[in-house]
Image 1 (cartoon, rainbow, N blue to C red):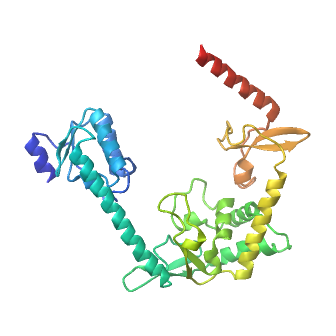
Image 2 (image 1 turned 180 degrees about the vertical axis):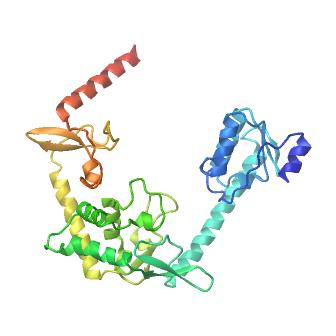
Length: 346
């Protein structure tokens, strides 16, 4: 054991860490891994002993970077299957790390084949429970399909109704206006009903949450397997995904109409982007830290806080920041940049 190993080296055990985490997760991204890394930085330990190299990390890059950081901090590193590690380039460490990475790759490939087989058989594969649905599980407790659940499904239908056909006055509502209406009604958000951390006060909807519901084809009865590539933000082409039939919450005609409406809104927004804002995406509000966005009025370009784009005036406390003339701000920023460049040259 680790304690016996430490005793054999003459070390007292300062702390012991055990985590039920995938070896593919970076050491610094694990709760206990972060604690250990901080102890190493503070030199609160003289040595780190791990049971086996592949238990420390199955990502060879993360493994070698972590070992190098610990050695650079002046801490001795030991592994039960390697012994003392004196360099991140230790040939035995590199071989063990490569073997762990290769095994992780094989496990992932086997797992993916199994999931694709299950999806091809018409079953939902272990997805996060979606707003408006609950999981249907098989005899082994594994997710097999989805089932609409009220009152969430009713809220989904209401969102599509407002967006495609209009409210009680026949007026179509944008995603932002729908979010405001739901907030005023006190409807729990998707994050709140799933107990996911929410940064704003309770019962306040984001427009993005509405958009995600409007563009998700699951609500029209088709759940897609194999969209995202691993944990990245890259997605496979539709030809490589597998469609699984699930109970629909809205009809296909309504969902298609929502996609058409959304595409028209994008084209309209693109046509309206007629003026250049040099600092777009680069500056934030000094009061609330929201992004500053461009707006044209009274024959001048302005940068204004985007608070109103993402919050609900009258429902949430407003940002007090005023708009800033773009022509003045851009000149001042450019002057500061030139001054900084000149200072660096001298």
